[in-house]
Length: 134
Image 1 (cartoon, rainbow, N blue to C red):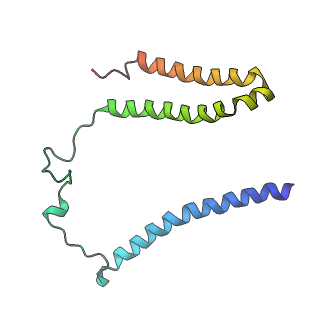
Image 2: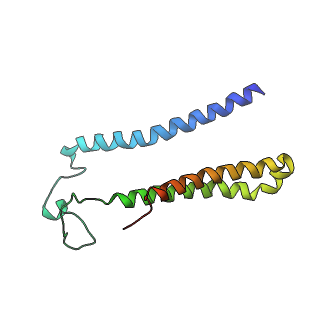
Image 3: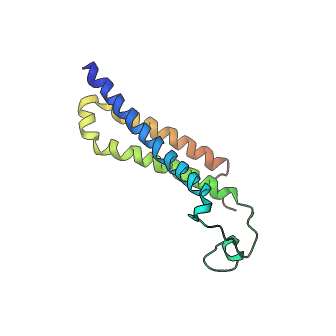
């Protein structure tokens, strides 16, 4: 029993090592190939077209450092929060019948608390004007 428990952690350690080794190996390989410029693996021939900003083939209208409206960022964060909420709600709703037989009304109350906390956060953001666009 205990042996199987630690074997599962061993598998997690192997997956974590592979998850770290693959990108690290790619970065190291890219760095080594960039040092091999004598072999012309990746020739460096900069010109005006390669150094220009690519914007769908059109000439750029402004510089590269434009001001970014923070409201885009805040709306995106609120979207991600509620998107994650749906990710948690869907499996709960799919197994609600089984869980309610086993745990009773507790399951429904726990989800009501979860949605209530998110509702309080949404009302706070709304009241602070984080969702206003004007």
